Every structure is written in structure tokens, then in C-alpha cells.
Length: 195
Image (cartoon, rainbow, N blue to C red):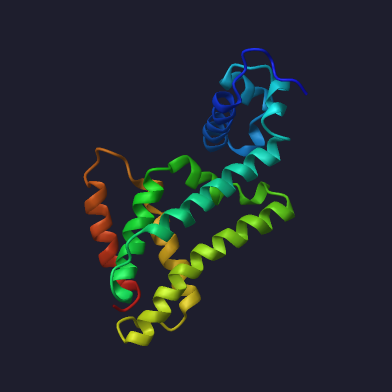
């Protein structure tokens, strides 16, 4: 299909993604139409199909991009020396990364149910990779004798849920700065894993 004269895929493509991200986070995937996304971008609805196969593909692409960015950012994050340093790094990283992307986080957790089975499996695999990073830290902490948990998998899920929960209540300019929130959550994570 030919692109319209004056169309710029490097500009319009990201605008389609940004509009979908905002609309899905605000109204929910099921309530948003391709026509609404097109209206937000300022193109005809049919033009969206130059940038995405369908709405499901757009949702999957947003979720996959979020998880891939998360994994790549964690991969280069300094982790310190030892399990407690790595756990602190993970806690602070998770809060910082997610507070900078509230819409992507909301979609990544609340719209899983709207993925097709194959897309769900792909996103779940990426999520499992991230969870495995924390599991490895907790296991290393047990071996070092600095972390005391009875169920590593359950502790992993509990810590991630606690850290991700910051996105539901934190507001910029509120009583606590991001740094203060990260400090307090680090204290809670330490307590949760017996460190």
C-alpha cells in the first residue's frame, strides 16, 4: 500500500503508538477504537493500517516494547557487590523505571487479559525473565546468609507487586519525593525478605 505524499513514518508511527498508549491507559483497550486513535493522531482511520496490522498488534507491540525496555535498562543498571546491594539496586530501579512510565505500566498489568493466547505467552515469557532476575538475587541472598525467605517465588511476586504498587498512589509534588519513596520502600523490601 502506498504511503500518502507528505507522510512521515518516522513521525506518524511513534505518534500512533503514543496515542494508543494514552487512550488505552485512560479508557481501556476494549473501549478504544482505531478511529479514536486515528483522530488523536490526526489521520484517517484507514491510514493507521500503514503502521500497525490491527488494534491487537498495537497493544502487543506496546506491551512488548515496555518489557524489552525494562529488561534492557535493568541489564545495564549497576548492581553493586553482593545480594543486598543487588536487591537495593533492583528495588530503586523498579520504582524509578515505573514511575517514569505510568501509562505503560498500567497497560502492562491491566490489559494482559485482552491479549490473544500467543501474544499473552510472549509477554508472560518476558515478564518471567524479569521476575527471574529478582529470584536470582533472593537465591544468592539466601546462599550468602543475608536474606531469609521460605518461598523464593512467592517472595519475588510479593516484592514486585509491592514495588509496582507505587504507581497507583504516587503523585509528583506530593508529600514524598521519588527518592524518599524509594528509601522507604527499600526499608520495606528489606523487612519483607528478612534482610
